Structure formats: structure tokens, C-alpha cells
Image (cartoon, rainbow, N blue to C red):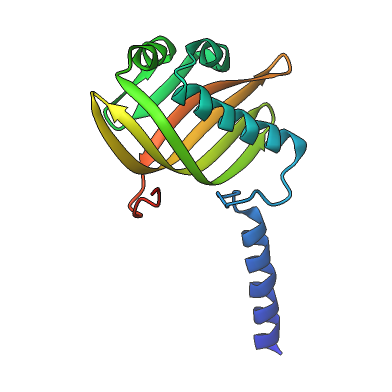
Length: 159
């Protein structure tokens, strides 16, 4: 009897722990809410704007205090826009393999599993990244507060 009670307790505890986990990137967001889908769509637009060097749209998306963390350093909004505009980093193509969104009040954290093809300092490179994007909702509009690239150890999938 004691073993049955312990087994049931462990089973219930395990289920609760599984449900408490953060949403992690999957190829298709499962049952994304309208607000979560809005963030995923905004992120997709951001990758297009970065590839197109559309600093006007990016300027509207990035909060004034937005921070960017790259493999080679970190900086704020103005430097990121100047880096894109000047071509120091050209985000040619982001192939997104999975995305997830966790929303906490007026803050959304999006994780993207991507391969990024970019030109950095005149050299074309492709890296596998987990990109963390933080969005803050102010006056009914989402603004980006942070974008961080974390290099993944998995092989690049992009052809």
C-alpha cells in the first residue's frame, strides 16, 4: 500500500512539473493564443525587415532602451540600427525552425531556433542560434526590449 501511495504521489508530482515548464520552440506553435501568435508574426516581420535593412520599421519596433547581444558584443538601439543601415551586419536570411512565446503580464519572451545567414564585416557566415526576443506591451503596442543571440551546438540545417 505504501508503495502505491508513493507511486501515485510521484506520478502527480511529475505531471505538475511537466505542466509548469516554459513553452519551448517547436516547428508549429501548439494552440498559440491570439496574443502569442501576434508576437510570432511580429518576430517574422522583424527578420524580414532586418534582411531588407528596413531601419524605419525596425526603429518603430525597437524600444528606446532596447539592448542587443551578439557574438561580438552588445549595444543599444541606435548602434543596432546604424550597424544594419551601414551594412556591418547584414541579416540576409533567418530560417526559423521553431518558435515559442511565454507571456507574463505585459512582457512576452519569444524563443526562436534559427539558422542565420549573414554578412558580417564583409564575410558571409551561417550559424545556428537560439534567439531570445523580449517584447513589452505599452499603450496596446508591442515594442522590442531585447534581442539576444545564443549560438547552438547543433549542426546548421540551412542548405
